[in-house]
Length: 185
Image (cartoon, rainbow, N blue to C red):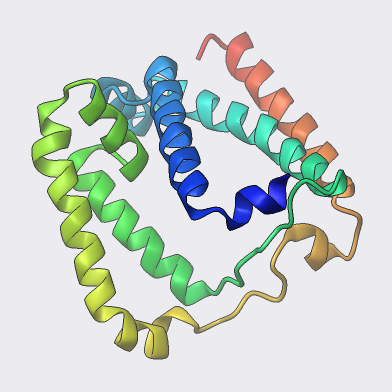
């Protein structure tokens, strides 16, 4: 069933559209498309964004590995490097600092009618993507592939079964979420 879905480009487009709508809905429902909540996170006065992100990792990480174990998915992890991580972080950080939104929250904020996200965020994403695409040949050779990571995932790096990483990280995330709740943050 999943192989058929994977090879059907029309189904992939429809699935992508619905997953994008669901993602935006969940971002909006979680409150992370609200400019004031995002700024509160950056000022360390509102931890809604951290809670939503950690909850997503807590559900997604074991979910992905369970689906892999059951044969429902095949992971295609792209190799990383220090160069690509630094460039990606700079591009993301500049956009976040200038506008106060990340690409996902821009889309969610536009969907809920935020004009600042529509006027600043959408053109910013298009311009940034265009510049990156134009500069990619030069960046790829000179920066992006510098300092390759020794492994694609932490379990590979540590040479252990993925569950030896997933379970402790899940427990750690639960502890952080419980601590934030206990502190009233």
